[in-house]
Length: 289
Image (cartoon, rainbow, N blue to C red; front, side, top):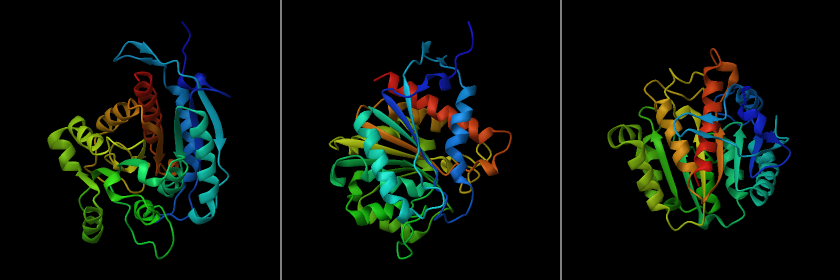
């Protein structure tokens, strides 16, 4: 039998959508996150549709909606375009994979879900709180603070994988003060990712729609060199993949994003293949719904 890749599932229509948001401006650490959507799409050609663990063939049709025209735009200027593109994708598909771009895309994406923010539950897998101040406008370092200021209740947010020596005490205090569920890397290691996700999903049990922000810099930098914010001792890639599969199985999850992949920093396509594996795990989880 000839090799069939995940890329072969991509066409003009499908129940799951892929949408690129190649935003690189407004980054705390300048780089080339705008290259990520095309890099992930290319890496999908190297991923088989056969899930060895479940002995199932992934056959979900994928609609590639192209890229939002935000390359070179600031997060403020690109807000409306990303929001509107996500809104169209969510209306027409059961699940949307938004390929950033830097983490600034998370804020407009949440606004594109089509329901008021107080009915949205947001889970992040991220080494950082993303709670930098907003006096300089939106950027990749403050989408969570921006969303809180936009009206997303802190109780609607769970942040998983937060790393030591990558945040500030004020960010930590502000997150807890807002009611955000805070789960550190040590929590994930001690309790296991399933237990952490159980608690996070339990906190968000009454939210109508869920979104998951997968900031790839949560992964251990030795396993993921292609992200400027990744740190040594970060989340094992296998744990990240397990979380992706588990969360994509939740029917209320309508949107997932992958952010902070910078292909210009990659070594041996390691990060690109990790991102492609993430997409496969999302599809495997979705297929189990």
